[in-house]
Length: 382
Image (tube, rainbow, N blue to C red; front, side, top):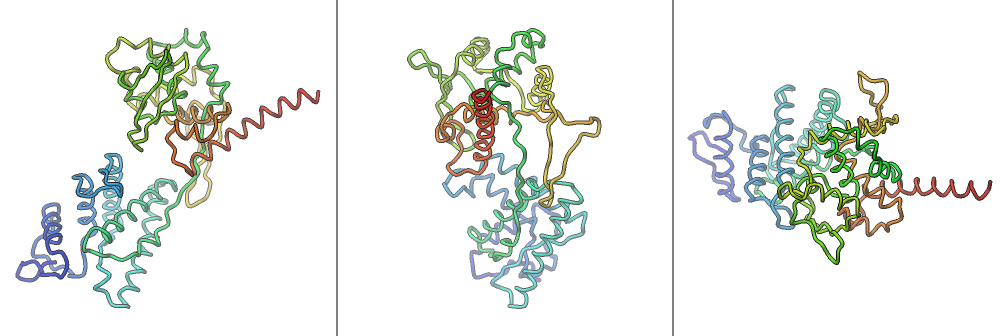
């Protein structure tokens, strides 16, 4: 990158990018300009920071031409912090080498270098930081995205050693209310009477979310412009922030009644909550509603199932694991359990065709339908 006299090396491919990166790197770190660097190597963290800046500025786009979402960029920033922490705590030197400049023996060493990195970084995430498979897998997914970016969009071609990074996934249990439980929450007058004002607002938001199947980001952003009245029926017309898919959801009478409560309170359709406070309030609401049945809470680390139990409690209750995600999961489960066709539910929920996550809801709904069918058959046989 830099010769002994301090001038940039003249390289065959895209000197403009190299000058741009070098300028960026030396303004972002304390590395001295006269440091002796291996001309075949690039500092990994510097390149990764450049990758983040390109994503944030819009110079790097999604394959469909859209800008990278803010949530995705935040995950890149978190990944960079974890990598920097790993390098510091483990005294690990992380760098990128151009494959084209390597000999056959050096390529074999490079393969072993990244194989060892995968093993050490996996061990660090699992054993030192106690992360579960989903989060660990996400970190390697980000790294694979970064390597693909280097290979496709920059003159620095590190090769495809990242293909040996295994992205682990785990099946996190889906906790959702069954139709009869949601029905109780909607119609229980006695519960309404004993709730505080804020918990009543929580109940309204929760019931509404358990009906329309919106992602929580879309739900808390609902305003009056999303409400349509067609031939006396009320609809929500929403474009998903995450997938940019449009949905038109017809609202039942109890949801219309909820909206009527807040029709004079600004442009928002529902009471305002931030996500953290809404999570806490949902737990309190469901505890007050009596949803305290014990649940089996498990996660996976290196593919092995780990049963979780709070230190201060003897058992994990449904209300303890409930969150904003419970609303969307309940809505999808309810629609399927009550016989709505899968393709219609997909359209409402915004799931893409063939999504594996969606089939988990189908299995839950089928188990519920089998249970209801057994009740009928027992009555016939008795």
